Figure 1: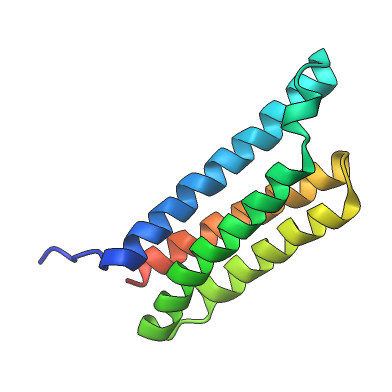
Figure 2: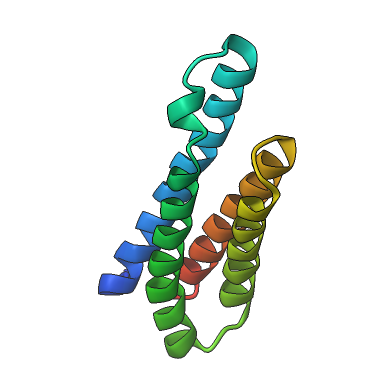
Length: 122
């Protein structure tokens, strides 16, 4: 029997995984381009990108993980995703540099993992 993916929750979980991957690529590419070549610092390291990214991540995770937690009553996806969002928020507090990159990368991997766990429990 084929398992049907929940409508809006499944879409938001998949969106969350894609956005997390894009954020990870942004962190790695931004670090390489800025540190290695001195390119794009004004745009790639603009704090507004990170603030907007965190707001979008909170909204997407709130919808998908929240609906999932209510439906499947499993705590792990929620705990993992919220821990990731906390790391992402912490990255905003430390300012630009290696610490920000590391905290953000840990955060987005945890958020993506929370979405994948949420999808599996669907």
